[in-house]
Image (cartoon, rainbow, N blue to C red; front, side, top):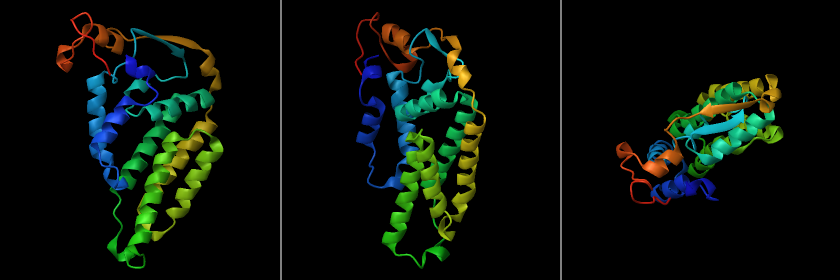
Length: 221
């Protein structure tokens, strides 16, 4: 439970210490698997408490998203637009873009005219640009960053990424077109049962090889 109030994400701190981030294109799948493993070990793949007070606009499964910064940004988008289904579709399109960018390999027939430094610069610009969209909620900044990627993907070198970016643009336009801000003002109560972080902290879970306070020791994150 202590990790909830930590100024830094304990999952990212542990993942970053285990993954070599010098190569931007090598991070994706390995770090994602490690991130999910660490979250489960810490119990962060569960809702916080037995019940959750929120609004009709908010997702009741936001805790399932591995990156805390993504959760926070999606929450901000939800408060701005109130339409979680559209925001979730946009987020999925960003994940597809991130995956495609991470796995991107340029056609050798198209790389001859570029120096290795230029290719590296373009690839890093693509990777960082795609990742930055996960952190943006200001409309002007989102449009600006999509435009930067759009310009980059006009190069034949990146033509395979164009359809994926078009999907991102489409999904984002639907968020703005189908705004339902009124849902933010309708309170809801979600019941989570015993599968929550507080219950895990108290009683532990043998399936997770975790003890709890009641079972004899305090687990500190």
